[in-house]
Length: 210
Image (cartoon, rainbow, N blue to C red; front, side):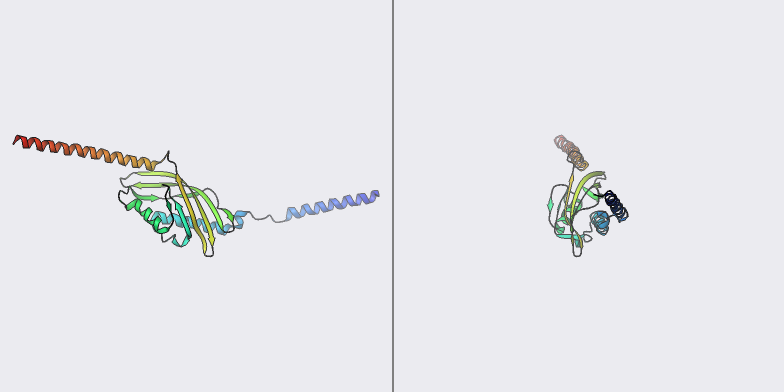
């Protein structure tokens, strides 16, 4: 190859490389996945806020329009619930049912990170919650739990499809409170038994004396 031709080809190669580098430097960066779906993330934050309000106020009509037709939830005490009416009965029973120990629960869920989208219409979110439990005897305790939620986008918006809650069985202040109440009840029953026994003995002695 002629020396001058070789030099010319080398210069052209450098020009092409410089041009492509300049284009890559000036080309706009592709938007991050979170930016691409910012509206979805905002809608899902609103859904979590609405679900939290429904739990804390026991007004489940707030969340009813946002539940998936195949909605299910696994509660922290390992129950599977497959309808809003069933969940309403379960939740209200914690406060008003026979032997109910609770007066109120303050749910405080926090997501670990933004929703992970499995496809265009399905998302999964993980998080934790430090919920405050107000007991009927006046005790107040906090329990930490973990949760996972699956959501699906439908024509009228995002729907809550699946929810799963879990808590530690080794460090569970709710079980501790239940044991405490049981011990108090047992102690109260023992004291009452002693008082009744003393009254009966007194009556028997009086009867013998007369």
